Image 1 (cartoon, helix red, strand yellow):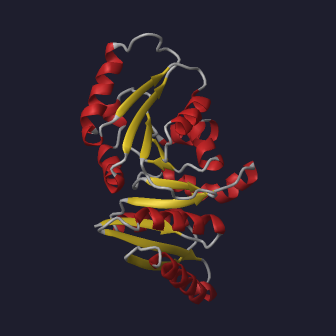
Image 2 (cartoon, one colour; image 1 turned 30 degrees about the horizontal axis):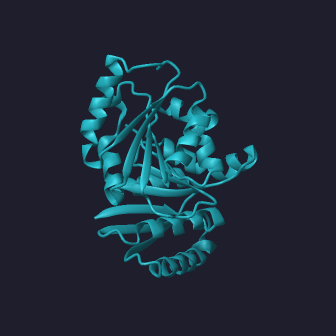
Image 3 (tube, helix red, strand yellow; image 1 turned 180 degrees about the horizontal axis):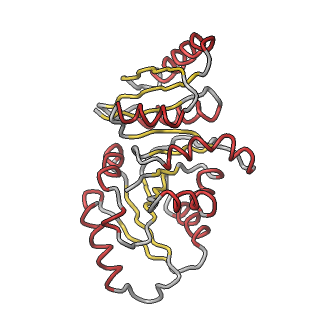
Length: 261
């Protein structure tokens, strides 16, 4: 049984993420969904339960079978969600994100990004306008450096096994001109072996503009989810501030799967 946690604060962003996840999981057997709400004040207890029950009924109509509602009082959603994920041995957390302005990114996106920085389980970040159309093509962006040390194979396989998608492993590197060196060949061979059951295709693209290239790759290959594997929390924080992962998370309709080694 795979457990998927969907935190909801009943905003449109969170509700869209919940609906996306429900459609994504509706035909997946042995999947247990947990709708989670953290309320702050005692007088919110009944309202929290009513909203969760209403959302549960909506998602059940989409075809999901196993849905549990969990609510608790608290002030730190990140710590509470991390604790719940450990208690439930969660396979995946699905959260929404929105906000094109820096202010909205800070206010709405902060908890999502904080959860993604915790080494708990993979986090699927669903943009506000995302609409589920199937998970057929998944892209794993890799720098092909020490992949054996940083790639969370078990975590990623647990997620990929939901969908059995076409796996596209892409490297964007300004230094590759004609042929791969021995180091890149070895890194590719290790990834090919680890993900053999998904028949991965490899792409090495020579360019200086990583961000634009990944965005174009997403369009060209009809990518449904982009996987990002940060090397450490500092690097991960910089990724969401400066690179394509931030733009995909905040601006596009493509969800981003964040998974730590």
